[in-house]
Length: 254
Image 1 (cartoon, rainbow, N blue to C red):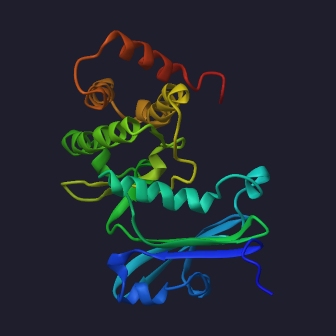
Image 2 (spheres, one colour):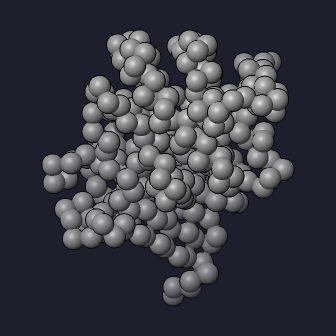
């Protein structure tokens, strides 16, 4: 006997993908879990693979648990956090992966499986991979300026909405590999809106995560330009206090 309280399942297909090859392929949670693809990552509760449908690339992120430790039993599941963050970004004009479909299954109040399907951003690499592979664009000051000019207002919009990423690292920012780069945010399972009391520390952590690799691969001028674009102009006394906190954030933590 099916008892709704004990078992429930939700699955949403983004309207723009109705009656498309990928929409038909991932029309249910069951069909999404049954799909094959090239595995990219795997851990004890999740996997991500890439597949091609109708000549386009798509990523399937599938979870078999809400999270690790206590997150497995209480609070928002990681996969729900993933799709809510991507939808939030798209809603507020922040460049992010296009969401095709998402949902999860819950039994006895515990998330047992869930999935998120996103469309591939073609010809992109994440910034950390660009560093690892010594991609020449990183040394092109004009190219990097264009990245910074997109990244700073995107992060400002995020924070103006009281949204904290919590893992705003270079690996979670894709950039197209051409002369006119476009950025795209990915992987934000812990992102959320926070109360005013927690906002400033969250902002500091986000900016410190960005600057962790920034200080190794960008000039002081580039880093200052980012912050000026982020804060919208001339630095105030409060900005100088925040910058000191950003620079010191990871001291003693590594």
